[in-house]
Image 1: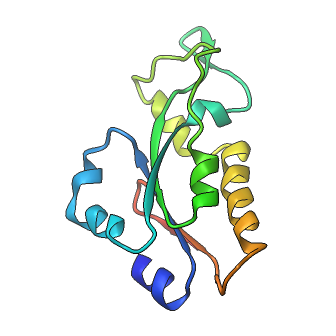
Image 2: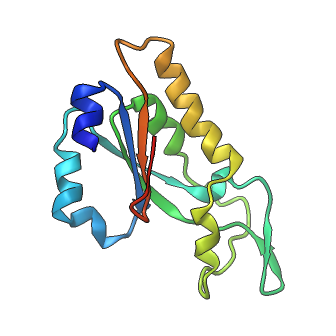
Length: 139
């Protein structure tokens, strides 16, 4: 799908997995990295979390370091914000990290903001394709 999106549709792709996931070394992911213009970015999702959450009696943010592979530098730059350590992080065991699988509005805004910036100078671009950690594609 990424090949079609890049070569036929001349569009953007965005691939997301936890930064420490072993899947970054799988053949299919390495093949994505080999596609023209693909670059990897890393960002912490706590930066995009609008407010702290309550987990086991404590308030804090979910620090999920996330790897992103995209051929759209504007999206990549917006997704590569890292935590400055100015807030408390909750422990992520017991399924808490699953909450980060639901993208916050701020994270979605970063993705859409990067793509809209790029569409202002489209050079024939036809859209964006997102492949999530769960293997789901979202055109």
